[in-house]
Structure formats: C-alpha cells, structure tokens
Length: 444
Image (cartoon, rainbow, N blue to C red; front, side, top):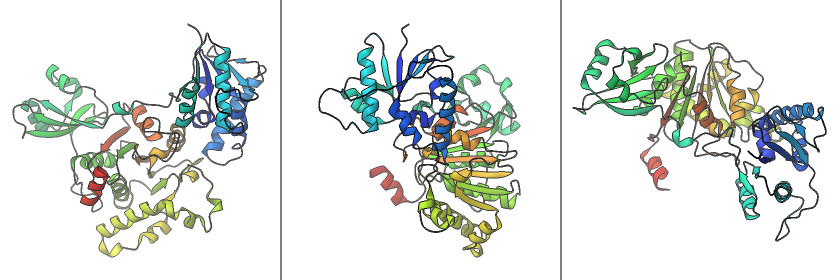
C-alpha cells in the first residue's frame, strides 16, 4: 500500500500536541508557517500555550535525530518533514500571500503536484480552509483522532418490550443479576452500557411498566432510585429523574448531561451538588466552573478584580444558585454570597483549575461543549480521591469555530467513557424553562 502524505494545519496541533504520532505508517508534512504561528502562543499561560510547548518538545526530540527539512523517521514507520514552501503558486486569482491559511494551502497544493502517485491530504479543523482546498483541487479532511460518531452516542436510556413476568420479578426482588437473564431477556437488553436506563414495557399490557438501570457495581438490573425532591427541586420529566439518579449515586464519579437550553442540566447538577455538600456532607465543597471562551483567554485586559472580570461568564451560575437557595428556604434568598465567602461553594473559570489536584469535591463543569478533547482530559485528570465531576452542555451550541457536535470534549468523553462503571450519561430532550422558551427553541 502506498503511503499517504498528511499536511497538518496549526489548529490540529493545538487541539492535540501528539497528533504527529497518530497517522500510522504515513508521512507527515508541517508547513513552516505553522511553526511560526505556534511560536506566537508558546508563552501563553493557558491550554493553547501548554499544547504548543508540548508539541515543541516532541519536535525537538525528533530534530535531534536528523534535519526536519529533509525528513525524520517516526516509530510508526512514517516520516515527519517541515516544508519551506516559498512564493505562492496557486492557480487563478492571487490570494493574500501573508495569510497563514493561504500559505498552508500553497504548501499542500505544491506537495500534491509534486507527488502525483501518492494521496496528499490537508488535515485541518477549519471548515473554510477545507472549502478553499477543494476549490484548488487539494484533498482536505478534518482531524479524526478526536472525532466520534455523534449520531451513535448513547442517550443513556431507551424503551424496550419485555414479558410481564420480568417486570413483576423486578418489583419483587429489586435486583436481577445479569448472569440470571434468560435468553429472551438478553434479546431485549441489547447494547448494554453501564449505568444505562431502560423503560420496560409489558408487551401484553403497555400500562404495566418499570424503569431500571444496569448497575455495574452490583452487576445486575436494579430499579430506578426515586427522589421526591433534591434541595427543594423535583424532577419534571422522565429524563430528569434518570439524571438525578446518576447525580446522587456517589459510586458514579463522572456524569455527563447533554441537552439543549432549558432542559435543566445545570440546575439539576447544582441542586444535587448542594444536597451532597450541605445536607449530606459527602463532599467538602462544590466547585462550579465554566470555560471563558476560548479556554484560557487572558482576562487580565478587562478592568476590575478577578470576580468582576468573571461575572459576565458566571452570571448564569449565580442565577441558578439564587433560584435554588430561594426555593429551598425562602429566608435564604440573597445569602449566596455567604456561601461563596465561606468556601463551601466556589465558582471560577476553568483556567484556574489546571495544575490542581481536587479531592473531596463535587465539581460541575458547565458549557463543556466548548472544550476540546485535550482540555477535557486536562480537567478530568485533576480529579482527586472521592471527587465527583459533572459535565453539562449542548453539543449543538458550540462557540469554538474549529469544533462541532462530533469533535468537542463533551461528546468525546461520553463516547470514551460509555463502558466504564464509574461514568454515566443522560441526554435531556424536553425543555422545562417555560412554554415560551420551548416554542422559541422549536420555531425560531
């Protein structure tokens, strides 16, 4: 099989500093302008800067093995080379020669023309660059090592038809070991994932139902744990009941809640966090964080204290906390600042989590769809002993121009953790904010 040649864009390296090692036996080319672009970020004290410095260390170790302009062998069997393309030689109207994307495209175009017997692919997360590449006859694709099949992500629940005897057995025993499932039962419970819920419906009587969960710790099918209310908040629909079950289960250390605006993701997570920290004392603190888009953007240029700078991004969290505190105890309205000052509740930007070890805490990461897979890995790897982390977000509302519903950090972690006992995911679909909000979501 003929080796392919992959030309990498800057955004691929920033999203994954180990990208150069993920192309198997094929050859990699990095245009010199990419190195120049990366150089602009090398001193940044954020996730982008970290990625750039990590990649630079990888490249430096390869440089010691030979001249990168000539090509250096990789352990995978391919090579890596830095291309020093000169003047732009694209056909048609002359493009801006000082624009980095055009220079990267020129490099890919020249390599394509110089290697007619080989497949040359420009790898970029930039949709517009892929479009321009197509115009000039250059094959382009997105970086797929961090891409998942969004349409096949588990929702966390499904409806199935079973025999009425099985539903009766669940109600009577409260637990059915997976090893005791009969052949007919096994057919009903296909695509088993840990912590997955099933709405079981009697095939002979649809009014005869039960909601159960695959409990990986008991290795059994168990009924849904019903909560009348959590911190004064009651579930309004089926999906919210499932979410509360996972959020209140201390054995499940990572919970992902996906859904559109108004489905109650953040409110449910905050209510369960307050219950666990303040009422049950399971965790010492509730830490709530949101990405200041893009993650790590320096807020030092904004006026005021750190709290004043973060307020525009954190206001939705404050609004939800005020609502919950007032609903739990009407006399507590306006006392949120007391909880913040005491340190029981901490609200901050994700920028400040990097480098920390966070034990004994209930962590909520809101708007997690704006994180890259590498950023999510950095955050989750901060989790210490006896800490639970909740990721909430809507993969259809992404602010990062280089990400979509298939390659954002939230979708990525749902896919990678779907078979682990310590993780669970629920997709919330029904809006509960208001009738007007629901109509706007559907019609506008």
